[in-house]
Image 1 (cartoon, rainbow, N blue to C red):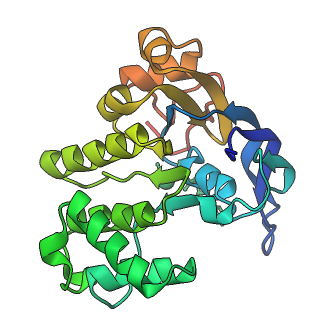
Image 2 (image 1 turned 30 degrees about the vertical axis):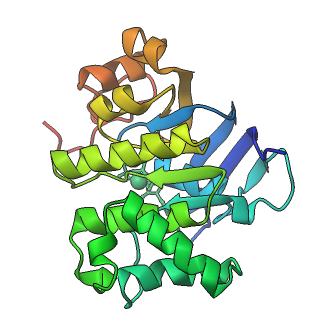
Length: 255
Ligand SMILES: Nc1ncnc2c1ncn2[C@@H]1O[C@H](COP(=O)(O)OP(=O)(O)OP(=O)(O)O)[C@@H](O)[C@H]1O
Ligand SMILES: [Mg+2]
């Protein structure tokens, strides 16, 4: 029985009040449903709330108000996340994956087979015994995917998995994402790269300043976004100091 769909109902996340600063709403009244079988891509400008939304969905932070519901209980081990800046232990590439598997109580014999399998699928077998922290950025991203893949998640969250990667490393990651999708893993991914969103996406969530402004199929979103701000974003002229719907006034010193 699948844990999907994932349903959010009027979810708010507010950073707690601190010193003289009041509680700040960062995710605002967000409601949507994500189904099995599609690659969902979350786009939006810096600070829109994309990473926070993934963290909320993955259960790393709790909503301040509203509900996040999966179709089944106890979903923690059925979902995995690849972070914007993956954290590797001071161990070899292979040991990093073994460690993740040990947390899921997979026994050593089985773990050896799984590690071998995911390292070869991600093209990292020859680097199995290399300390993870000396791997290149792109290799570490692939290792992070291998580590998540080893856990056989039903849902995989990926936060900007190709930020700062060159075109060839980006291509490798996109192929891995597609392989996982083809194997039945639900992909929920953020990206800044609109070309990538077009290449990989089946459906799109567009976030701006903590709000979900549009949810549509990828084709509809790129052909004719319904929302003005989404249109400006796609055209590349979403200027944060521009006045208008949902945009704040510029600072006094802006020209
Ligand atoms: N714990 C926190 N306390 C206060 N503000 C926070 C906290 N976490 C995130 N924020 C703010 O919430 C907003 C959304 O952050 P988030 O990291 O989700 O953005 P993003 O869409 O992922 O941006 P980027 O494209 O740069 O990765 C930002 O303005 C950020 O500064
Ligand atoms: Mg982010």
